Length: 290
Image (tube, rainbow, N blue to C red; front, top):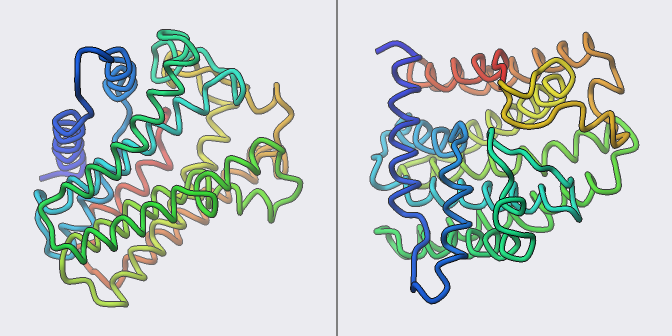
């Protein structure tokens, strides 16, 4: 199977599970489920659940063991996008090529849809068919990396704006990187057999991939186009945000992208051929146009 074929297969697996385990409930408040599922079904690359699945399989684990954990990360990610787009945050009207959740359903319902996905993520893990100790560890990993010392902490820095290269690295590690790290750590956990070195290597891969991923986003905000990206461009320059492009120029940002992509791939050396898919994934994400 080629990398492209394997990526397509893993993306389809992730998408199927994400939709199968999505929140649902009573008709009396069906609007909040409609709004939440509108954002889930709007598309997306499903990169985080794909990473969780790939890490789990690399360490000898099974799809059915990791996918509830993988879906939980995607629900957290989607909730964060809904809230990011709100008027009080980035005030965006386009996401994944369609109107943002608050444009479609109103600000209040979008807020609640995000809250629904946040809570549903932890419910999904709690309901997983896994040993209680594994579930407890998974909840600890995801809550820490999505909370104030993880993704939310990065969003706080993003609101006020990074003032230096060091702050920008922290912002990217938290706002974008934390959930990618969560996906890798949960994938390793779900395999049922990670040793300390394997666990740390998977985490190192994800940390560097997260930085590369956000640097690429900075580049696409300048060089991308709305039709391909499915979201508005030049948002960073319009709001005066410090990015790798504003700090180092487009060539410097591309050099940093290559650097962190290389570090992500280097972290996989211990896995040999088992790490090929994730290594190629890192390369493909550095070359993406959306």
